[in-house]
Length: 259
Length: 281
Image (cartoon, rainbow over all chains, first blue to last red; front, side, top):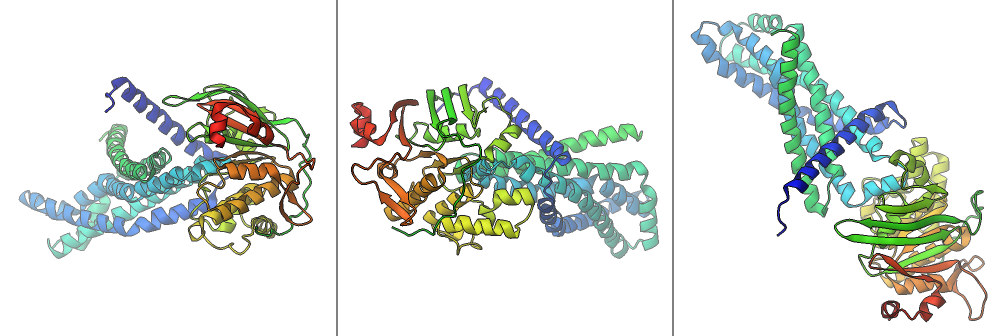
């Protein structure tokens, strides 16, 4: 068994960060150059956006519902049950909508991208593409990054809306709140900064999901076992990066809007 | 022996200058965990076919990948079609690679695309869709490899030999100036191997495409050196004893990352090198 070398480990990590940064940078730079793979981008948008809709709707609905259920008992102690709509709205729009949507799509699509590109890598299809004068970062990575960013933006909006509806169902049917009261407090609670925070996060998360998935796919080696490893690593890395970047975006925007 | 459809006459590329080097390796070395190639120097002349032989793991496939710029050497210089590629950026290499065709060891066909889309891949990249003209060219390329009825099939629906022939059609559809074959008959039965070799010989003799071919099968290598494609009979035929016909086919043998032999089939057979003799036996 080879002896573990901290130097080699550190070198590998630095190399991985460098490779990822270059791939991520190229995926953005390719948007401004030709050729543009519009049909590939639309195909990916369908796979990522429409394909993820059921899990995003389910996750959003039950998150909103459980949020209303959990907070109602606490709010009731202070006689503030009427604020349920406000609490659900702020939590969903600022935090839970984008983050849970990001995590769900990461689980579904980062893994999909890593396994698809990984399989292409180990069967020399990526090399064949390069050999035919086609840039894999333009053909495979940029369409996935663009469609992930765009579709996650809209999926988060849908998740927010469905979450609020879930919260409303609980508030109206179980807690006996007035519908007008719920929706008015929910609407009035939201400020520009809240909406901006909720809409800027999915842009970042979408980029992370696609770039991480593609990076692990394109770095896969070692046959089918390597593809499996790349798939797992992609989901873990994308999920962790989403949570870490969520913290920093939140902190940055909270400072900017002086919460 | 299968009978091939008559090839459509094609002139050589206008830049053709017989004898000039289209690929030149100068003292090329590359190592991974251990040195794989050390001081490899050779050149492939225009219109020439070089057959790379050697035991497994001697770096034959690596030579092809280096020639295509898919890998960079640690030292040395590689010139392809008058361009020094070791210092070229990936973006610059894409234009050069469009003049080169490569047949990968396991075909490397895109498994989610049909045979037609695979063969037309390069052309679709330029136009964005399959036009009437592209369709006709795909048909011509598939007819060359006798697979014109596989248009709408997926690679998974083809046999190993058929996949290899589709890969050849994909490589030749743009009439590249150089063709690189990585073990095109590896893992195939003798009959199918012979069909593939006949296609390669046909490409060599009809279009005079410069080629670098990696193989471990001595029989295939010597078939290429002793047969030519007769356009009148439309099939590959052996050279008669005493006939003066230069097939521009030479052998290169690698051992432990170094070239130990370079020459014609006759010179290879006369070689006194103990390793070459053992390899041939």
